[in-house]
Length: 259
Ligand SMILES: NC(=O)c1ccc[n+]([C@@H]2O[C@H](COP(=O)([O-])OP(=O)(O)OC[C@H]3O[C@@H](n4cnc5c(N)ncnc54)[C@H](O)[C@@H]3O)[C@@H](O)[C@H]2O)c1
View (cartoon, rainbow, N blue to C red):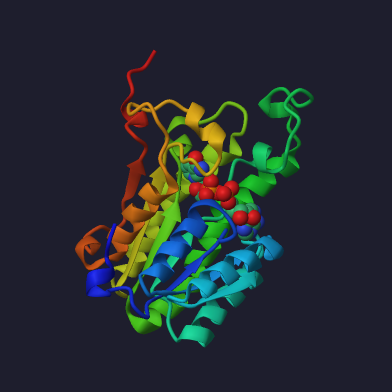
């Protein structure tokens, strides 16, 4: 999507979690290409630093990187403070950090065959990253957004939050909490402070090749850019009426015939 003509993101400030990879990195590239500045955070600092360098070398909007484990509220607060101290405001926060805990933590599904066999620490990690991490950023960022009487928080859900998962149960549990509890609640709080909150719930996205195996009505997975274009539309002047909603962007997967 080409927003560059009217330069509406020029000088605006975004903060992302999970910035070293996938959709978050795609957002950071697009946001800065359109002239916005960004604080990119991730738990993986070496990988993040390479991404920040790449963006600053491109020479559009400015990127600043910082280590942030979204499970640590102090680090989330420090990330928001860094954005405010560096750029003077926070216009958009995107809560990208997340993932399916058995995959992220490389759980051996041959050894831990069913849900009750998986160590509870795996589920703790998933609930903390996918639910509490987003909750923490909402709490920390709204302090700044309330002061400036404006802002947009984009939470990231998943089609799995609608479907459930018989094995990695922490993932749909956390994502559904974000989609149906957190997003509406932040929008309710934000309505008297100029703050909007929206959740994007993707179907399969090709941040990994294996996502191509997940079925959709369109017989394909999304390119990361297709998710980012939707987020940019919501952040743009044309998207200002979108608030408090979870928008599925899933190629029609939720509409597929049952059975
Ligand atoms: N890829 C998909 O098909 C898909 C589908 C639906 C929803 N989602 C969601 O979209 C979001 C982004 O997915 P992606 O595929 O682009 O992700 P990704 O796996 O490419 O990147 C995730 C990033 O999060 C970082 N991260 C992991 N733990 C962290 C922590 N504790 N604190 C901070 N950062 C941490 C990782 O280092 C990594 O850079 C996730 O929330 C995911 O659940 C993805």
